[in-house]
Amino acid sequence: MTTQIPAAERSTVDAAALQVKRTRHYGRWAGMAVLAVLAAMLINTLFTNERFQWGVVADYFGTASIVQGLLRTLWLTAAAMAIGIVLGTVLAVMRLSPNPVLSSSASAFVWFFRGTPLLVQLIFWYNLSALYPKLSLGIPFGPEFVSGSANNFITVYVAALLGLGLNEGAYMSEIVRAGINSVPPGQREAAEALGMSSRRILFRIVLPQAMRVIIPPTGNQLIGMLKTTSLVSVIAVPDLLYSAQMIYSSNFQTIPLLIVASIWYLIVTTILSIGQYFVERRFSRSDNKPTLTFAHLKRIVTNGRREATA
Image 1 (cartoon, one colour):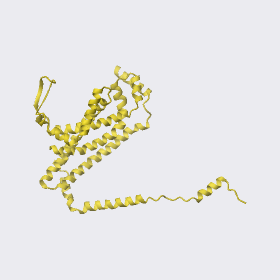
Image 2 (cartoon, one colour):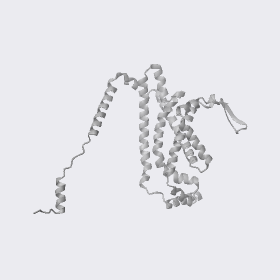
Image 3 (cartoon, helix red, strand yellow):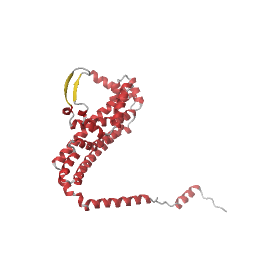
Image 4 (cartoon, helix red, strand yellow):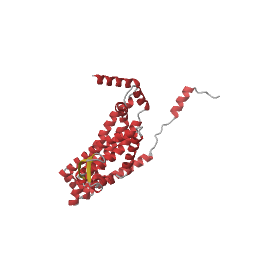
């Protein structure tokens, strides 16, 4: 005679009979072992290979020429990014414009400056006087108000800013355009229904919401720009890399001076990465907030009218 076990007791018996076994991740352990061996080899060669000459690295790490080169690198990075962000925003708005002349002109600009190497652009701007020996400012096809030699206007710093800034503007325009396109079309339609102007819609409605998408790649571009400024050494701009090159060209300590420059680049990029993390976290707070509604737009318009009449 078969005894029937109640369903509740059966589940208890089945659970007791089960044995929980941990999943064995042999691949993870193998990968950890390989990385541990490589890390040990790296540490060993850093401390046992005398050709690194850490004493020379320490001697030149804080010298005046290296620090001045670092300051010029930071200045070039900030100035080129400022040009790129402003120019990229203008180009992005032009590309989204219904005017075919504006959109096609912006597209041509982005196509050209993204399609040619940055190093070629830097050398081109540096040698602009070979193409235009004299630069002038005046009425097109009319009288000239100011004119002078191109070599006096296009210095190495101007050539570096033109090459870095214009090239960055082409890339930033795509970032800003992607951010603007990420804003739902209903936001613009609601703002237009309230009678807001296109300029006000852009700066009060679209761009604030697009910043969540624009900020992360812009931070990456900033870090990339810091390292890209090393290309200006080919046109004799005394940045961090060029300063290191000038030193090791006289004392032939190539590797130690390159290590000095690399350490400074690592320090600055680490600081920028930390700042990027906090900025991204600030703008990501909008993910937990409700989408901008018609009532919010109406409140913005009402407050703006009160400010205008005050």
